[in-house]
Image (cartoon, rainbow, N blue to C red; front, top):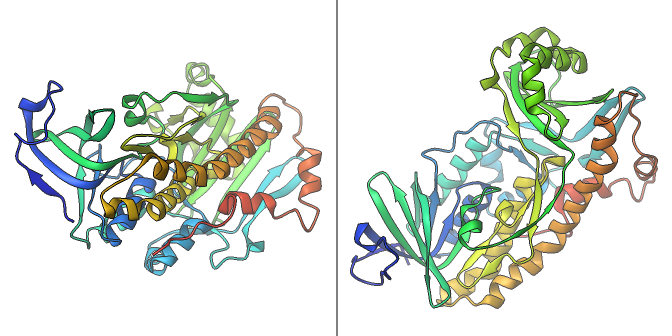
Length: 422
């Protein structure tokens, strides 16, 4: 069933906006948030014949320093729907091994080459390109509708059930009525707030500064990561540029900014000497983006008529770059479980609860893994000017043949594989 326009005088409960609503559309599922989780969910539902409307608050997908790592599980999902080859025809960088350099030498916490998968690597691709690819594919289906620049103002609730949203766009106020509304609108989720959800927050010892420096064609491809004397830095291959991540102690950005841009350039050049001759390209603070690292999760991801997925349900730390991975896997499970109820015209709380039950164990486990990395690796590394050495337990784990692939499997797939069900 394609999205259809309903006359304004029908089905509009008075919430103070109904006189200003320009049009009302009906759809089976309204997905709020055009990030990886929302876009993939909309595509999967559309290809199964479910009427779906995808609302994205921004006018385009082009935003700096968004996660752009496509893990093996995402590539397997794209392969299962026949899109992996076309996706990987787009420019990207493959990374199979993540070595971290320290004063004591290099160690390799993640090695995807040992995994039994068609895609034993992470594909780094600008998120903009990935989202454009997914939504263009979804547009092939007449039951899919994408609205850019759609800023949700409120939930439509009737008799305790969410029946859709009202959103503002260039022409005024609009309304989408839906059997199910899905919040996939990220770590600052408006639907989480409007739905009255309260997260359980976990502390993080660091924030991350992102910026770019030029990359020479003759330099090695992939990732350079280093921990040295109270500093952590990463260079990510972005073709003609390195995307630089500089990890700093939590809450110290303003102190660093007060010390001046020259201090940042000098500190990063000492940590990453391969980029020392190019840090002068960092000429003003507006070139630096600050990620305030946070992690949290909801005890309940749903209420009648509303489901939250991805960072809207569980904000992930940037450790191992799994945020996109887990948002997409949430989307796959949601599509598998909810397609039948959506096509039947009735989504019950037990259906939404099944999505959370299926995804929550993996999410909680990887958040626990990230917390341990932050506590045992990141915090000690940032808190000391002495040479860093990996924790003994980690070194032992990486030496035992039957166990050394566990971190890679957890990062790549979580608990068990997630497959698209047709």
